Length: 237
Image 1 (cartoon, helix red, strand yellow):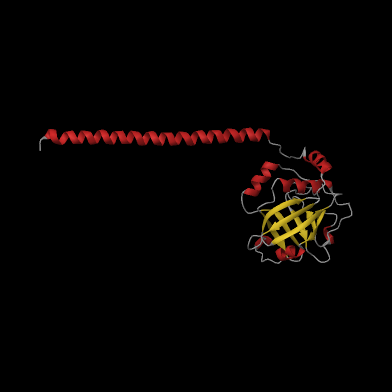
Image 2: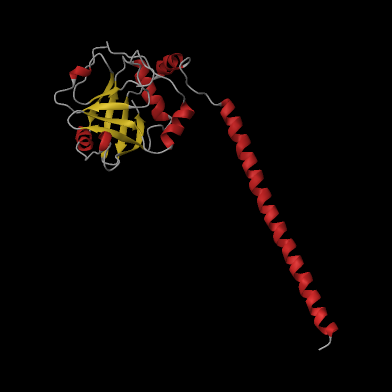
């Protein structure tokens, strides 16, 4: 076979490989450009959304909940957990705490959080989680505290739902709005009166609350198997 006969097919193959490489580079470039354009659109929409979104803070929270509670006719919520569901009636004469709980419920904050603290024969505490979703929701809703409202005649009877105080820079025992606890002690835990704000009571499904209180717990009173709050919904009046 002559040198010319060998060289000609080799040249054809070389052109073919160069052409394929060009097509691959072109496809990769197009794919990369698509991703960059999508990322740019997403970032722009997030920035625009962030600029328009209302966020609660220490300065506007009280005024906001004062206005929010004026038209509230609903005062019951259903809490569905991985161990069953129960219903809570919120007290009308504790307006800021009632409004706060309904507002957070409608924002979907409590959905997929957990009962993260269980103290036997005392309380179950919910509204937190061992993931990144709860902190993300808190950042979107806002950082604020609520003033205690302890002189409305409500005591920490069994079944009372109350709001814990924040432990961070809080000399006035302001309430942490994202968490709540429910008393399971019989007949109640009255040493809590005056220190925390009762804002409702369990009116059905207390057996579910007791079931949660009886789960095994580990270090820090966190349940050994997570007890999820699957959904919280406001019930029609």
